[in-house]
Amino acid sequence: MEVMATESQNSVSGGRSARGGAVRAPERTCAACRKVGPPESMVRWVRGEDGSVVPDLKGSGFGRGSWLHPRVQCLAKLVPALSRSFRAPVTTSPEAAVALLRSAGDKRVRDLLGAARRQRKLALGSAAVEDALGRGLAGLLVVAQDARAAAETPGVRRAVAEGLACAWGSKERLGRIVGRPEVGVVAILDDRLAAALFDAI
Image (cartoon, rainbow, N blue to C red; front, side, top):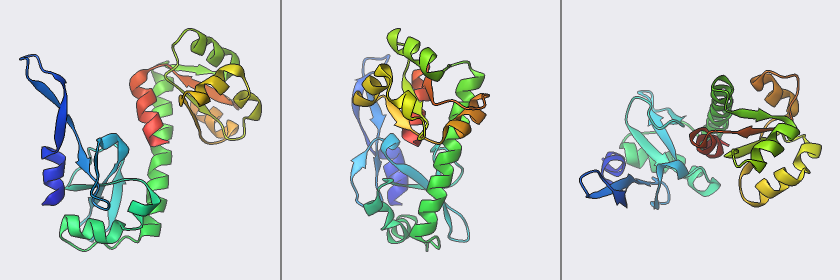
């Protein structure tokens, strides 16, 4: 059971526990390239009884999981890598797996943006985003792919240069999720939600 061992045993030192011992940060091994890294850098896949696999972007779905980098090189080896890891045939093609991954990623982004809206952890529109950036409150910017004017504001350009911005969706689609007809840019005002969104996008 390569992956079960990977999920439960691979770890590195990363801080101190309350007892003074080292806190071990989890790591996973990619079933395709065999490189070790943090779970955030990979996607967990779960196999069904019929041999099909689905991505589990939350990393907590029921069943045995195997991890892969969401890179072209690793996804191209998805079938043999996961078949070896699960010790059972995988019937999902790499093309279907990529489509499933895109769809799951898209849903995850929508869910996280919805959660940020419900928790009132969003700044909406260029003026509010610039204010949040100026006050150091923005953990991540999500810029609509068709929001050229919003992307050219000084704060957004700085955030892009610092790796604190992602492009996703359209103004209309982003607006629909956050309760407006259209919005070109939103700032996520919660570090945990910002990190999860960055990973999903």
